[in-house]
Image (cartoon, one colour):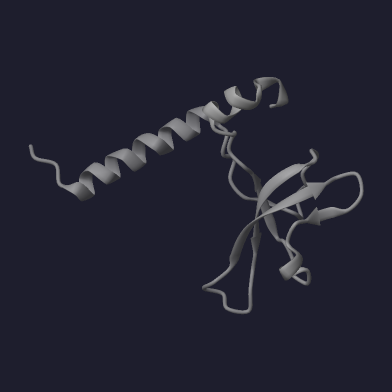
Length: 102
């Protein structure tokens, strides 16, 4: 059976989703109402806007020991509603700078 590009892409998407589920690195969106990050690190954040069809997703740093969210100066009046951990750094970068930092 011949596979068309759409089917190939769908197969690839499904394989990647299965890999992510097994890996469990991507945990999905976490509501700030449920919990906040416990580690000083960058996170992907979700910010609703006045236009419901155009929410913002940005990378912001979270400092659990004091300042909370930072790194989104131009959106300083925004309200972060959800967050998720970022995936691991690329393996070749980890090797280059030393894996002990990760």
